[in-house]
Image: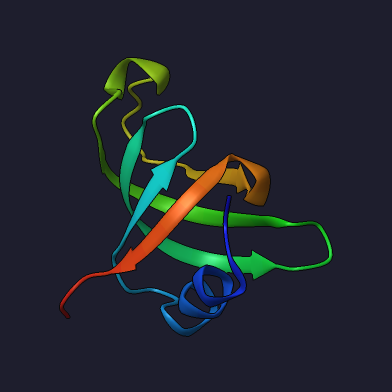
Length: 79
């Protein structure tokens, strides 16, 4: 389950790449764009994932939403 330190990290890493481990085993490398505590979700640009089949291939990459309840852990990456 996501912790308050994970939430703080996401809020401090807007537009910077983070690793997000999800409770279902998916690992995302993403750039958080918006972190909404009230709605308990993040909007992010997807950089890469170990489950690319979950995402439709489009010419223009959309932003995605992920609920806090699906996040197991967040890790800052260099840069």
